[in-house]
Image (cartoon, rainbow, N blue to C red; front, side, top):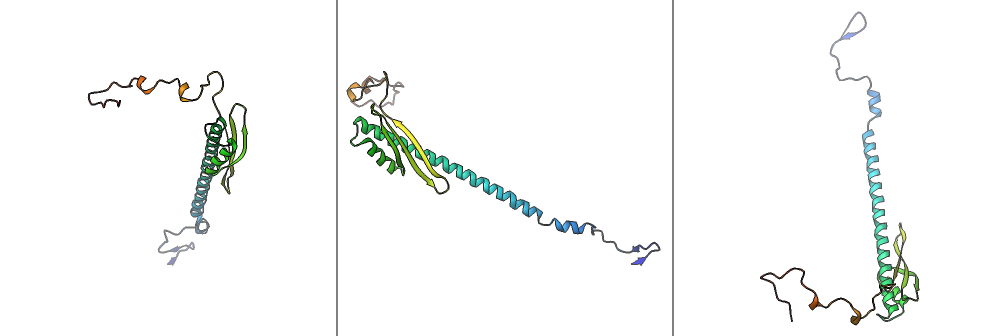
Length: 171
């Protein structure tokens, strides 16, 4: 390199040299940290959605267990099946992995059942409440096959007229 009169040097210049090289080295890895942060937020969101889905499933199972227990207890209260209505409700709830926390029978043979279902360590307990019984009011239909107002199978006309390849009904 040859020095000039004003103090500058002549010779090959480094075209790719930057003056802000020190600032650039401080920003190294910033994209990695940002990507890790975004990934963490996505994972946390997925975990939250999973917990919400599990709580919805637990609530649905508790409601189903309460419904089934109440229907079975109402059948026992009406004398359709043998047994004490609340004992029948406990047995049905137990088969659905639930525990009966309340069972009350009304004079009209309706039964109200309250159940709890363990939903896991993070979600706690799911609760269900159901009431079942005979129809009430003037529209109540007497039970038994003799009181069934629906016509028998022979009186019901076919919904679609039989075609040429139709199989004749038995009897």
